[in-house]
Image (cartoon, rainbow, N blue to C red; front, side, top):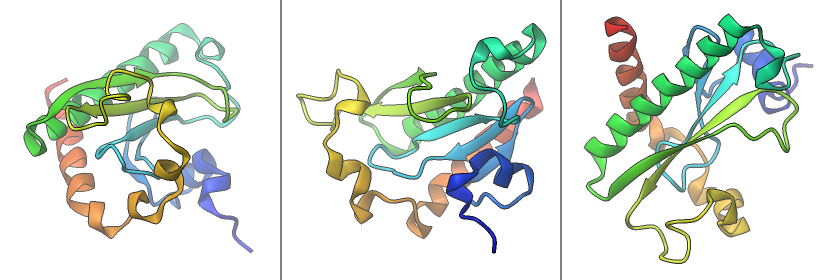
Length: 159
């Protein structure tokens, strides 16, 4: 029996079975986030499930991962700016507190966010934003996915 791709995000990406993958990049996988209460939320997954932290990578791979993070961040920024006039910025985070593999969060931030949260960490959003089905990734996000994929392709062609 095949396991749920969410329990093996990197392995499923390596096998071509992770439906959230947007593009394979140099040192990882650009994926769209499971939740979209901030439209465009994406994650960069390292391409080796045994890598737990940035310092586990040799210097050249580390620089490739950070370059991939920059590239995904720029793609999300371009798409967010084009799709929503209230776009403010993109936050880039490498945390590692929950998942035991290297990954980076790409969070677009918007002026329409609640005033008590707009300038704070995304992780302070109420629990329902993370669990409510209305914010779950689904087919309604296909145009957003396509836009980010197209931006990644465009950015890769000029690098």
